[in-house]
Image (cartoon, rainbow, N blue to C red; front, side, top):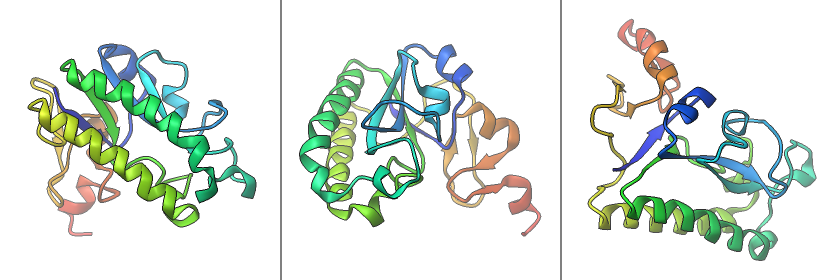
Length: 179
């Protein structure tokens, strides 16, 4: 099974697919309910990737490049779980906007860490490809919706129901109306 990109997912999505692994951006404390953590925190089939120090938007809550020795072992642990799941033929639900790009502001606040995180992500994609799961894709038989503008396919129930593209940040009706 592949890595599937999803703009958003809900706790019911996670609970109805216990054999899938859902990835979300997390913090060093492993607490808080901002972003996708609201849906994923505490679920046994969810994996948090540390992208912040604290669940806050205060200045001290953000990672810095100097945090590399703190976060690298945590990334190794999280990606090990993800990679083992992929090697076992499991489905991984990956945020279509990535991790560290939203509330964590990792590219701007810790560009060195951002580069390091992308090495872990590239290695995860290589594991998927080595196991016949070429890149990001579709789970057979799962409902999906494909954006008419960018071609991204989402398997998220909300995206399908609302006809929304997380990549374009637009509803399909807006695109079809020429807006």
